[in-house]
Image 1: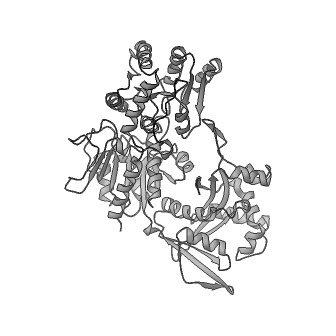
Image 2 (image 1 turned 45 degrees about the vertical axis):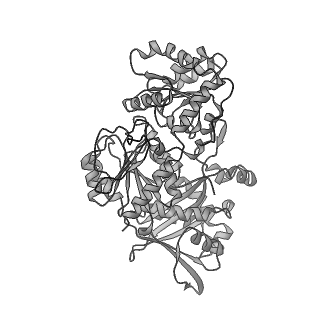
Image 3 (image 1 turned 135 degrees about the vertical axis):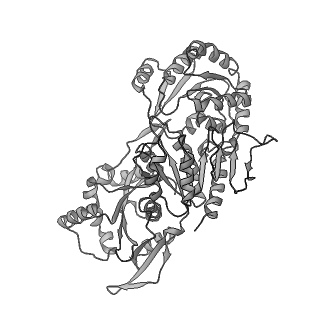
Length: 546
């Protein structure tokens, strides 16, 4: 089943909805206690559960395109529809579905054994679509994230409840010997969490850090999930949590300063379990931090964009175009280090989401749509600057400006787009692949999106707005022949940009000019980098299994 699924903590606003689900006829029939539940009983139980530190209580949220059809069948006034989260937004002409509550999960710790017992139910309108299996699968990852010391979780269902039996089996739980409770045959299932292959991602996202670190980690995590590795995210503050949940990953928030990595170690280490690898994606990594992780038994994978330090890590990843290459010029891994560590270098390891892949590079006869990309925050107003230049230099083209979640001048951009009808703003977007296929040219900052442009075959003109983007912009221009407009922050940029952009467009007016650039870009990035990284991370995780 495709879609996005995650668990969020039960809130006070869920109390009435859970009461409705608990008294559903089928739920009562399959429960060990079949008597109807009064509101007073439910309210008292809800209060106890919320206050119980030995209990974890979550709601399953789903967003896979099926909810709207269900809503139509139920009628738009039901509580389940009313409880929908994440209001719909437009993603380049596609409507993103809201996230809906589809079930509830509770795990209560047994004081004697320390194991957590599972109680769950799926909302009546969502049964029969595989959500029970999804919920039980998420239960393992979320418990590992929230309760690192938890070793075992288990559930008991009536033997005649074949639907729940199948859910546990499909979610990978092991079946213990059947038992008898109150004269009824009972099936018992359990999961040993120490056997789960876990991988941690330590990354941040927000107005100051941008979202590039998180986005590439999500792409790698998705590929790892296909290989049987379950990802848990760890972040300094809440900026990353919502994004992680939206993509189906638990996120532990440390409430620390992302710029002071060493100070967070006392909070980080207790969150980690076993010898699980930790993928570090931060420019503030230090040698003491790495040593503390490895000294605690955790192999360290480092997303090293800048290549300014030589930390003693197990895997170093630098997929950038400027990454050091072997003498033969081919991207490859290097395993010559005596400690068995290795490097993954060059754009063949660029973590591009599968949605950006396409065969060939379709180039239209004329430039009809131009995409402007500025990153997550655009503190210098690059979106507005290029929108004005492009509307002047391409009088027949539509200009699509992507507005990041932390853009600082949204209102100014909106006002300009209201006046200039050929400018369209793209807000609240999580995937650029569709719009890239509909555009003919891009003007982009030299961040991670540059590699998505290459994989999609959309010809691009590049500039940079941060020190860590300079080498990428220069290497992109050098290896493809594309135009690098330079440093947007410099005093001379705005004075020179108009002539530079005009010259760049002259070389790309023709279909053949854009076709040749698109071909060179696709030769650099085939879009399978995340899969290659995931394969290596799985090898690493298996090497350190306890």
